Image (tube, rainbow over all chains, first blue to last red; front, side, top):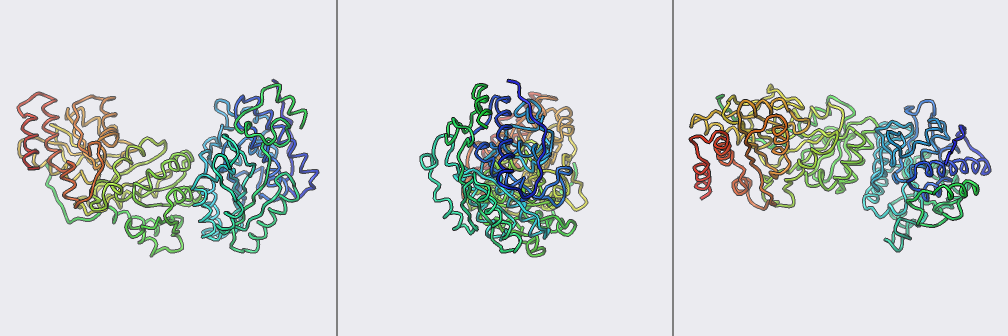
Amino acid sequence: MNVEFEQISFENKRKSSEELSVIAREIRRDIIKMLVTAGSGHSGGPLGSSDIFTTLYFNGNMNFDKQNPLYEHRDRFVLSAGHMCPVLYATLANAGMFPKAELATLRKYNTRLQGHPGRDMGLPGIETSSGSLGQGISIAVGMAMSDKLLDNTEKKVYCLTGDGELQEGSVWEAAMSAYHFKLDNFCWIIDNNDCQIDGRLKDVMDVYPIDEKCRAFGFDTVVCDGHNFEELQAAFDVFLNNQKNKTGRPTAIIAKTFMGHGVSFMEDSYKWHGMPPNETQAIQALEEL
Amino acid sequence: MEELKQYGSKPTRFGFGDGLVTLGERHSNVVVLGGDITGSVMTSLFKEKFPERFFSIGIAEQNATTIAVGLALSGKIPFFASYGAFCALRNADQLRISVCYNEANVKIGGGHSGISVGPDGATHQVLEEVAFLRTLPHMTLIVPCDYEEAKKATIAIGEMNGPAYIRFGRSPVPLFTTPEHPFEIGKAQVLTQGNHVALIACGSMVWEAMLAAEKLAEKGIHARVINCPSIKPFDFETITAAARECGAIVTAEEHQVHAGLGGAVAEAVVKNHPVPMEFVGVKDSFGGSGEPEELMIKFGLTWREIYASALIAIQRKDGGSLTATRAIKEVAEYKG
């Protein structure tokens, strides 16, 4: 299947929900094209979290410079759920961090778009390697400690984990320390699609209630519809206020999403966690999007 | 052979603690993470002097290791120290993926290494971590022989770029190198000249190798004692030269005999110049409680085993006048 990636680059400033949905749709289309070209990879999580990434990168929440990815005063994003990297790659490409045509190299030999993010490949916007679940969040906490406690900067650190990832005990070690060090510059986003490879969370290992756990760990916790841009932005605003007013409270955003959102035959199905579409399915998905 | 000079005893962990303070004075971006046993692994010295650059992470070694990565990716030089059982093995995946795959400038200080931990027993006597750590891409791994070398090695890993691990011990060990004695990452040092057998050791076993060489000299056997603190990167040149010029090798380490220093030497020797080798180390068993000296004897980690192994290695080399039987008998008599 021949796919083409349209070279467009979106601005990062406050937008209407309609404008954001255009970007999210482009990211989802890119994800489908990347995965059908790669022939392997994760569909469900990336499609389901596209609205979160759109809000984070294109609505003025993340401070970054596409001309200078290592810009000293940039905010940093850590994808703790490394397997969801297709959505991050598509987001970064649509933000103008690298040419969109490179998305076609996902998972290919010598690519900068590794199957799980590899910092050694030097892809702009990839702050750390990740893929072994539960580690990225501790790395993000370390970054936030450095920015706030040692360098006394206004920089922010965002981290996205999955919800199945919460079964890794070290996630809660990280949460404990974000509270202990009063990291109001730290925003933890949980993509709560209730799916993992083997099934529903409660059937594999029940991690609920996630919101009560986050509150018990000292987080200013917001639960929102992860497909509603206004709700997502309101949640990010809670974080921005904590950071701006130096409340000393870290923020947790529990975004309720549907795995595979936007593609009817993938929506809310854990079977699509780790599977790419075949050509027929990709054509149908692109038509729907 | 050169005269042996011992001037006192001191634990290598003291060298780590003092080295950290020196680093803190030299570099404002050196930070230290504590894992609740800061007095034991001597990071307490840094904590007292630079409280604003010390962070207590609690009993959470996986978190501490990965927080260190976040600090390193922000331009800091983080050190995290705990007991090797917990900061080399419990956090193994964090070291592999977050530290080494990222090539993050994270430094780990692993205390309570080897059997000489003493009364704490098997759970705390880590004997396997060298084997794991030396397989990690980008990792630098140093096992210093005494206080001075531990201090120099701590400073050296702090001033290089990339992941590094220093292994140190709890109990006092003989102090025999000086502040002037050379130390370089990637280099082994020939301590005594000799061509009959090479005794290659690291950590606490270097001094035992020196004692073994003294006893061998009494029998007219000239041993080349090599201190090999840099397990990775490894000094292939010095080790290969020892194989070529001595023709027989004994390795000695306070670690499992498998896949540690002995393994590294064997890999180098097999590839470059195969010669008979004997291995002194813990023989595929866990440790136990006791006084350090008792345990070192029980687990066969003294000059006597090195001495006996040297005789066996030489006999294997040339089938000469010295017999393995005699050597083994001497060890048996000693053990009573």
